[in-house]
Each structure stands twice: as structure tokens, then as C-alpha cells.
View 1 (cartoon, one colour):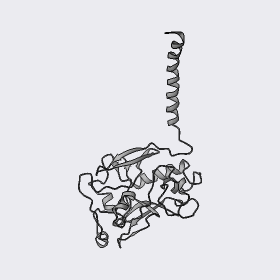
View 2: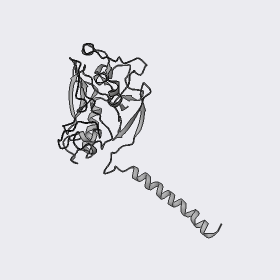
View 3: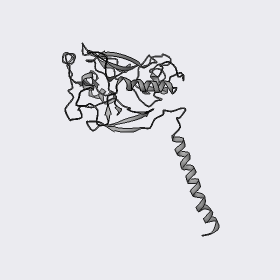
View 4: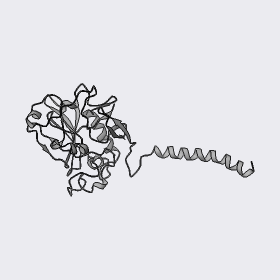
Length: 253
């Protein structure tokens, strides 16, 4: 081996180490223009594979749930009749307007009883988020500058969670339906799946509202949820009757 070959041989090792540490170091920094996320996948009870996203110290689904079975293999009843839906106090699911094509995009709507059934709508290692889990998510986004105006005060993080398409245009500054190309900086990809009413059983607000159950009761009749709107900058928190049909996202335990 000549002197030039020996030189290149010994030069490669320190350069490799330098490059390796440079790459590792860059992974530890939050991008100033993109989400602080590391995408992965989750397999549900039906065997469906879902995209997931890491936001802060939490790992969330990045799609709406489309499961038809509980963890033990029991079916989650698909209830299409309005009167039957309103009278239930057990778990049920449905597609918006009873259209399976719509469910392929927006997932199923579930009543709260399905979300908290002891047979588990979530696969092992996952759960329906509590009200506190949702609060941890929104607090993280606010504290880390995900408000649409770049501030760290108030609650204007709706755009950072909303998907980049599928929302009705609102023309309202800072709202999910306005300039959708700037949505979803968190990678959460909230889809406006609408909801199903509690007492009448009919469907409303597809493309305008994204509503997600928490596992936390407010009282005997109601439970907490989170929602985003096409014309609203904030992430809303409210309690709704357990008979409503809302979307479900899971968080890793």
C-alpha cells in the first residue's frame, strides 16, 4: 500500500465519526419549519395499519380509527337505524351517512360506550386518551409555538392539528379551512369527520368539524371531548352526551 492509500484509509474513520455525530445531532433539534415528530405505525384489532406521530412525549394515531372489533375479537355493532342509535347504552359504531366509502377516509363514528368498553377498542399498548392526555397535547403545542400566529399564549393551535385538505373553506384568518396548505405542522392530521347526533341519530358537519372522544366522564350522561372547526382557530373542549357519534384517536400507553 502506498502513502496515498494509507492516508485515505486513516482519513475515512474520523470523517465517518464526524458525519455520524452530525446526523445524530440534527435529529435532536426541533425543525423551525416542520413538526417535532417521528412517524411510525400501529396495528389495530382488525389488523388495519395506521400511521402514528410523536408529539412531545406522546405517540398518537395520525388517522381516525376504523376498527370493527374489540381487542378480544367481539364485533362493535354497526348501527344504521336512527332510533336504535339514540336508544343505546352499549357500544356502537357507524359510518357517516352509513357510507363505507366515507369511512375509508374519515374513519368510523363511535358512541362513548364503545370508546370505553372493557373489551378495549384499542389494541394492546394503546388507549383512548383521557381528558388529561388531550390537555397534555394541547399544552405542548401552545408552549412550543404551534399557534397559527407563532405565539405561545392563548389557544390558536387548530391549524397545527388539522389536515391539509378536506376542510370546507371558511375565509377566516387562522381557521382550519383557510389556507389549508399551512395546516398540520404537528403531524396530527385531524380529519373533519363530522358527527352523529345523540337524540335524533342524524349526521352533520362532515368537512367542517372534527370531534374526538376522551375516556373521561363529565357526569352520568356526558363525557369530555375535543373538537376543531373549519372556521375556528382554537381547539375546543366540551362535554357531550355519551350517545353522540364522534371520531376516535388513540394514544400510546
